[in-house]
Image (tube, rainbow, N blue to C red; front, side, top):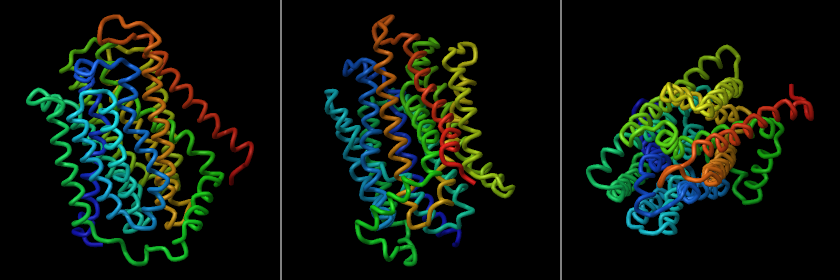
Length: 409
């Protein structure tokens, strides 16, 4: 591996995942425009934003098989074309239904960005470097989340939310071209013989989901990641406005600080995991520690810390990224030719949780009357966030219950 080849593998996928996270988080900033222009309530806002997640999730299981069979370059580049189309549909939509269709196309189109990069890293990089490489690509996502704050707010002021999505469509098409023409084809030895039939591929998938370590640790990982995505990519913005009383500009700046913490968290946890790995501490144990602190930060948010909302959100974002370490932790359990299916199976569950949580939060908030037009109840936020946290805590309890049911060495 030369530095040039490393960059050829890393940078195009990083650009794609950057856009994926930008799409994921942008509704937190433009939600006032959608409420004003389309007239959505909390439940419909949650449904609209979470359409990205359910479309993303629906692609994951077939995506894992396709990634293992065709390789990450062709799959990632092809799907991004659908993402560009979705951005155009979103930009020219005037109804809630059409916006949901556009958002779903976007989610489907970017569904391979992270998983394709993870698969490429397994194909090209040594195992001891995968946690660091995964952390680096997740950092690119954090930069996308950062762009979806004050920079998007500035762009909206220059044009409008429709103009922003037209620009995103162009960038998405460029990312597709970069992955297809810049990323090298995977090494021939990584094209797995003996796993080419659908039955072989399906049996590999069953091997993954029946594995006792997978069953024990994946629930807390996917609920932690899904909860963070659901809150960070939409509900933090309205929460800052409705509970914290922040203006639109102040909200965008607070989201910017949170996104910086997100990017730092992704990179930091990758570095921390690699260093602790030399001491015999697994990525999974490091991830569990970070997710436990993340739960504590959620409890603080539920208490509505008006005087230190931004520092609380910064810590929420930093520790919320720890769950992503579980991807690297699972690499060591399964053979390399199953990597695509391992990653996409976990990702499927993450995005099902994110969809359910994001829409569910809106449904719970809607149970309380609006204190003013376009605003949502503070009590509704508390109950919704507490419900999400209680599910996470039950998944932590499952780790110990599963150990009692089927002890692991």
